[in-house]
Structures are given as structure tokens and as C-alpha cells.
Length: 133
Image 1 (cartoon, rainbow, N blue to C red):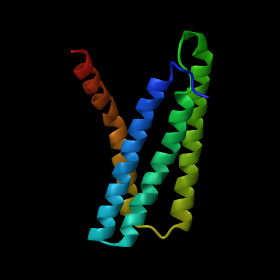
Image 2 (image 1 turned 120 degrees about the horizontal axis):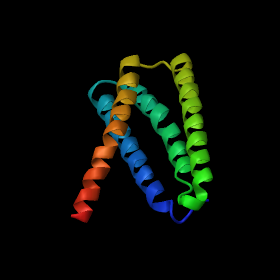
Image 3 (image 1 turned 90 degrees about the vertical axis):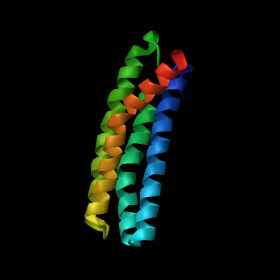
């Protein structure tokens, strides 16, 4: 259950995850249409390897907010990050061991999402400045 104070933060995190998922779908579609289905599903697999753990992290890390919930906030971040890391390793292992993938498309998709994660603070800061003057 999400605290009332945490709803805004969780919504912002989920918006980023939604954007990343749409980015992966667009990349997979373009690669499938222009090149081959193998490149498309390889890009999709790379994207899922990033987006799914990130989605779980957002749900856990932004479930609580406020000074009175500081221990729950810290616990949520640590647990969310641990699960994110473990799930990422599991997905990498499963896709790379059992999937007949194009490694180039897989890694490009994953890397694109890592870069989008790095650039997210600039986007959110820009929107914040726009709203407040």
C-alpha cells in the first residue's frame, strides 16, 4: 500500500518507467520492421531486462514518504534496489543463456534505457522549473 505522501513520487517514477517501456517498444518495432524479427525481439528482451526490475524498484522505493516513515523509506529503497539487482542478473542470465538473441540489439536496448535513466533528473528538473517560474 502506498502512503498518501508517496503517491506523487511514485507516479513520477512510474511515468519514467512507462516512457522507458514505450521507448523499448518503439525500438523493437523499428528494428523488426526495418531489419528482422530477431533484432526486434532481442531489443525487447534487453528492454525487459531493464524495465521490469526498474518497475519493481519504483513500486518498493516510493511506497512510503515523510519524516515519520523514514525507516520504511530507507528499507524500501534498499529492498527495492536489492531485488532490482538480483532480478536484472536473473533476466540477463535467462535471456543470454536460453534466448537466440542478437547481442548487439539486446545490449543497445539495455544501454539506451540506462542512458534514459541518467537523463531523467534533467527532464524532471526542467519540468519543475517550468511549473514554479
